[in-house]
Image 1 (cartoon, rainbow, N blue to C red):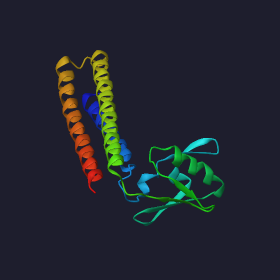
Image 2: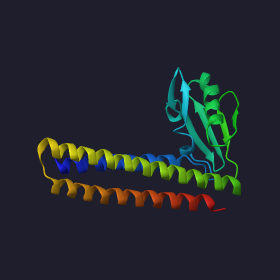
Image 3: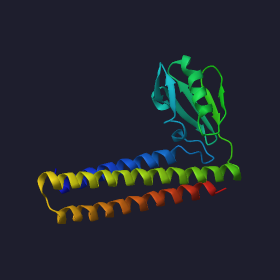
Image 4: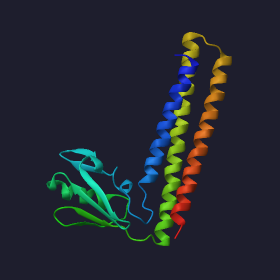
Length: 186
């Protein structure tokens, strides 16, 4: 594998890390209803874990309400349990046909908890980026040893990889600050 192929592969992995982080941020409650809040919630259905969006229709009739209508009504209890067990802090109302989630306005205390959670997600994303960087440094070293590409090329790869990592970390920080600002607005 050449150095340019390694850089392309690293780019792909770093993009996935950013996408995962953005997905986690989208699932945080910010005081108004959004399907992103629950669509990735893991629900145990038929003996396996499924994202909620795969087993139910999620609609937003107004800014403070979410409707979750499972395609199989026997899954209502499992969906209700998944929502109660999640970090969302929401109380689902099961009316026998669908689950209604009323999104309460965020209290100052809940805003602070969510801001801490954003920081936690950002740190997890940075850890993921560091792991990707180390994996690709090891791959470059192995490529150097196997194909004899040279230390200079390996160092150049390390420099380019670090530039990409720095850019991704800056993007993570930007997303985190933006989400915190959004949450702290009353």
